[in-house]
Structure formats: C-alpha cells, structure tokens
Length: 223
Image 1 (cartoon, rainbow, N blue to C red):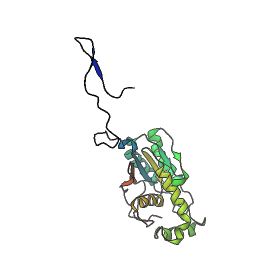
Image 2 (tube, rainbow, N blue to C red):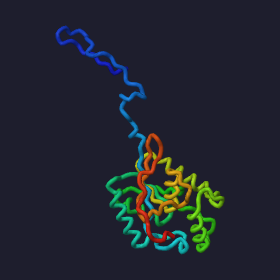
Image 3 (cartoon, helix red, strand yellow):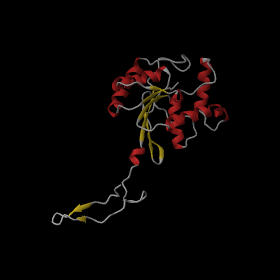
Image 4 (cartoon, one colour):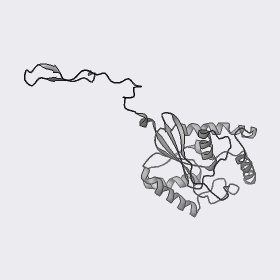
C-alpha cells in the first residue's frame, strides 16, 4: 500500500528516481491536518405546530384551524429551500398537519416519533388538564411535582440527541422549551414563548449540542 510518497522515472536514463522526499501524513491532532468537524454537524429545526382549532381544555387532540394551516404553509416556504431533509413529527394531529406542509414540498413522509409529543398530563379531564398545565408551566424542573415527568423529559432529550443529520422536528411549546432549557441549563419549565410555526434552531457539532437561535415568540395567551 502506498504511504503517500511518489517516484518518477528519469526521462533521459529510464531509471527510477525519487521525485521528492517521502513525508509521512501529519498526526491526527496536528494543526496541519485538515479539519473534519463538519462531518459531525447536524442542524435541527424545532417547529412549534400551527394554531390549533381548540384550546388545551377543549379538545384532547385538535387539528389546525384555518389560521394554523396558513401558518404551516408560511413555515414550509421558509424551510422548504433548505431541504429535502428528514422530517419528524409528534403523533398529535396539530403537529402532523403542520408537518404535512413540508411533506407536500419535499414529497416524502414524516416519521412519527412519540417521544417529541406534548407533555403528558396526569388527568384526562379537560378542565383539570388546563389547571394542571398552567401551574406546571409556571414552575421549575426541580419542583417535586415535576418528578413524575422526569422520564418524559429524558426520552424527549434522547430523541433529539439521536439525530445525526439536518432534520425538522414538528413538536410542542413545552417540548421545545424543555429541549432548549436542557441545552442552556435553564431550570424553569417556561423560559421563552415560541409562537405557532416558529422555528427554533439547535446544532450538534463535535463539541456537543448548542442553541443557535430561539424561535419567534408569542405575545398572546398560549393555552
């Protein structure tokens, strides 16, 4: 096997002659070695779903309303030129319908990933769900009341950290806050307010995951 050195035959004598001194390849940590960190990079676009047709205390799994559908189309206009790329969605209707806008642009289906779904509530009663979520979103992950959600949080973060290439993830308000909070060391459950179809950007490099940009924030009521 060649060691990177080359030899040339003399044009006048036909005898082999060394054309240049043999130089070994630089060691892996040498400053003269080409960088390959780009191979380890992955950009993830965290998209909050479009506006739902019902509030958290009105429907367990609402679709998008007409405004939400238009928001999804605007989001697809923004991200479409960056693809095609893998598309992951929560199993909830509003996130799947949001992802549909990009499915139509790229001509490929989204992969449904339950781990990026909305935060699970401890009750199915719609009124009680709203009261619980309001209190939970005002708290921190250190609160004893958040202990039951440690598994959901761990699985959500694992689902994101498994991503190895540029990907769009259609997810939820609390889930996006949880991912960003994990990267920034923020203990508050809600530390920013991503608007419907806003795009939060995170990136994986050889040094780990980092926040690139928070998505556009909402000024109105979230629930």
